[in-house]
Image (cartoon, rainbow, N blue to C red; front, side, top):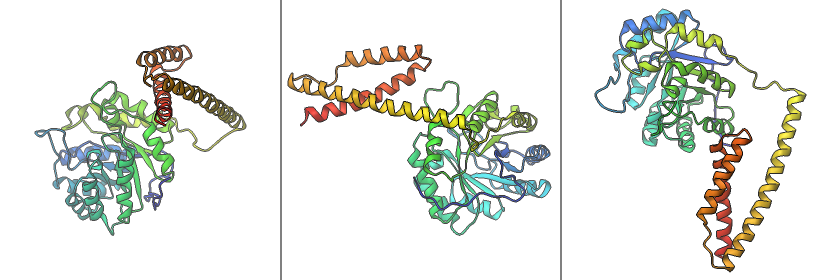
Length: 356
């Protein structure tokens, strides 16, 4: 497991119970829009207000943020509502401007996380400062790159650090704007158990109707909180209009959440876990037996000067096991992926035999 020197992200007046909620518009657009949204969210009990001041856009020509002027609006939010304020930083200059404006929390965006030079620049700018910093996952599904960004911030002396899961970009857009790939933040939690991880359902879903189910999924997976885009008039938003919700809708979504215990267990659950362990042991025995047979096949192929890869046989296995998995109540693509990995290990072992 990775070793980071971390402290809890504790903010006076903010409950430590799950879920931590950070909410506000994608972008600070006008002072009126910022204040109206912030006051509505504050009335709903939200303690941390987010708003983008600088907006990295995929293509030029779009709204790229109001800039430094918007920081004065965040200061006014703090003064008028008592909320903490948070925004994204992508350069050292952004960091210095946020510190001058007394911003409480900063986060590093997905595009920035993907660039170690940019992350190091931000880390250097934050040296000697005690401020909570959240790091979004990089745009591509690279856990090491994500952990590397967290380590750079931690190495700069910051200890109140968290991660934001906002999904991963994909050329093949289907349901989601960014694929959740939940197994990656789950592995991050395994590698750094004391790291707070919050979910960004707005960027994963890309559509406001997906926010509620994604919030519930995140809670069911044990995430510590949610960062959600909320706008007083989402349809007229200057950026990401489709994925923002009104403060009223946000309040409705949060009130519907079921927050399950992470730690409570029962004797029945322990028994079921014991059965899982038995199944896993059986799987290992069966895989070991299968690999022994594969090595015998490798020996046969070597003796008869045959190639290792028999494409027809491989396709037959994938199609047959995929269909069999569906009949057993499993996703056929999942079963195919399992057998692709098994086949990869089988080929590796046969290569060792043939090349001896």
